[in-house]
Length: 476
Image (cartoon, rainbow, N blue to C red; front, side, top):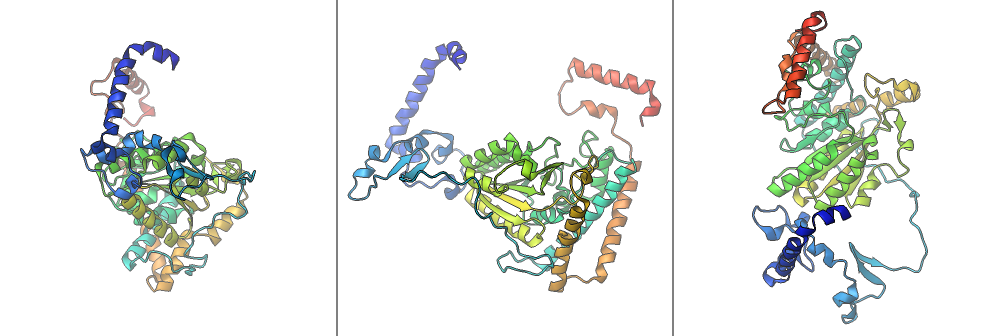
């Protein structure tokens, strides 16, 4: 900082004049009301920000916030007729009461934050406090959950057969995928991790498109540049998956700020695992979202494991939900294996995010019933009996099906027909995608530079020479 100031000293007088000008504006009565209000609601209360109206954008300026650093007696509030309390001081951030007790906050609550649930393990409703859905939506949710389950099984087998190089499943987390997607608007922007293929499936991404991406052929939206299961679709407002952990969280928050500035009737949603909350990106994004009051839903799939690292080795807090409160973000813990609970939580979270312009954190408790990916063998670090228990006793697809049957919307005789159809469609998509040519090698070097730099030209030349020397190693 000292070096910067020494080199920038000649600019400081200009900066001082600019700040002086802003201070002058700040004290003009016609402008002061824009930045200083005794009881001014936050942006989340006054709605969207119209373009070109500087007065309605106090979060872009810091003057109003500095006012809160003045103690009450300086503002004269302690000298009001009986209205002041000498045991209260308006510290930066708000009023705080004094106490004579030397007491530290507990490092862990006596009771964990409760988990919102609608359906019990047998598919029976245990609460009437949920969003009602019509038959068509419920049936589509179930069919998509079965399709996702089937797709995961077959693509996983395809990887084991050497037909694709990598795959990651959503086994045990189908309800989080499909139910959350069903509660969103198509205008909402999705920033996924890599276990949310069901969200894209719900939005209309076809099984054939999934297969094209996994095989990296010329019809793949990513032109074969991404790992399998790293989907992306502009058409479906689904940002491309990145392998790097949690980098999508600040992206989602930044995009939500953009939606707010544009006055859009939409929000962003970002998905991440419990391991993602152990990154700096998560904490920076949470704080930014809270301070700037942006319409974003932060959905954590707390499935107990960050690859082979259990949550007990990641944090000592009561899961993830309490981290939201620490940052000033409205939060809820929900049963991630309960489709109705997830649907209801995301429905109301979206409503709050859009109408009040506020972030909402959802911690969905679930269990990763499959391996982390095809590169993992989870039996090496957790009991097989534990995995099987979750697959059987807490299966979100089975639980939702039982509820549908109770509603009279699904017959057991339809089950085998649905699963056979889904299996046929997935296998057909694989057979088609497998026969499609790979993208031309030139696609590796496009879409970044308008005019390719010399080093990139040299790399392309070197690659083509290598292909010519070893034609049997390449499909081109």
